[in-house]
Image (cartoon, rainbow, N blue to C red):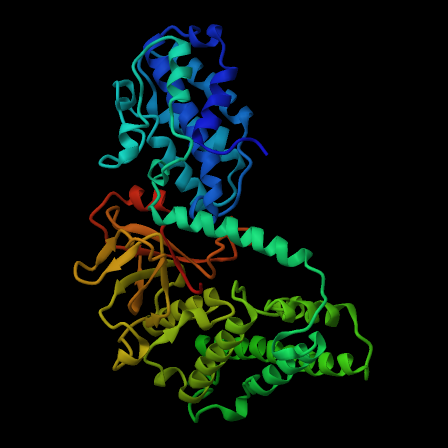
Length: 491
């Protein structure tokens, strides 16, 4: 592996810059300052990958070619223009040279925020900090005074080996996230190469351990969600003799949950028989056997399940909670629901489209003119909501990653040290015609899981992405973009 860290990255870059390049522009001061800035930007976007989803949703392979193209672009603009064209520099470098690799819209936003720290008029001043003001990193990483090429290399040599996370715009908690990821990776490798020998806990053999676990889980599998168990008005038809959008959403979710529940209970029964030698142990059942020994969700279930990062024990409890919510909705009907749990859905986007359709039909508004506005309530849980809202829905069950919600000031605030995630109060999703968001609010993406990457759909959005929620803040929204702040449905 190449050496890790900003120092090693910058050292590699400046080793390739020649005296001819260093002196090769008609505006020497601007050229050298901005060349130093773009080299630093290149190091930041490459090293930011180690923070996983906090750094980038998708791990991009930015390389030396991107930097070379950006250096040539910079030289061309400086030689050909009397005044530095900042907007053009930002666009070509961010959206084309580096942005050409970026497939996720939220990563593109993050890239542009990072580039704006290095391509701005203040970079031409000596000592302009490349890290947020007020941090110790600001006095270590800065725009150096003009000197020879060797002076730059000497400055890079003097940088610390260990990068402070604030230079990436991240919270100190991000260091814990990175170290935990490294540890998990190591332990996963160790677990994977361990021989499958020896007994289980309590003096049981491996087979007895899996049989006991399969019996326990089989007894706890929730019952199927059936239409005959619905409340009196749950599937009542409207005046046109049709089901409304939310009733159709409920039926679709019931179908998905029933498919998963049948797969879980059927495969658990088959595994028990296969271990006893009553049926053939197929490749799927053998993989399931191995997964259960490691407390992992079997691939056989994951194929028909919702996205989840939980180990088997937590995943099973989560499944029971989700089915319990769906059973409550089935019994109460739309009119009896005061608050919904969006994380319980297989397909939350479908539920939100259903809400907009209901609102559009109720007020005879074109649905393409509707989008959601948001109000973060004071109620902490669904149980605290006394009645449903007049318009829209109350939704709970969200987590905040990379920030916390300040209950007193009712706005985003920095995470507390070592507290990785914060819970959010109930949020009122309000269908609003021709809604225009405030530029002062932070547009916070909501994801289904903490691994924010998903399969890219035809719209260019990740399938893991649900919606963007506007959140009040007293800081520049770019601050939260650099922090990697996002809402999550499940940890």
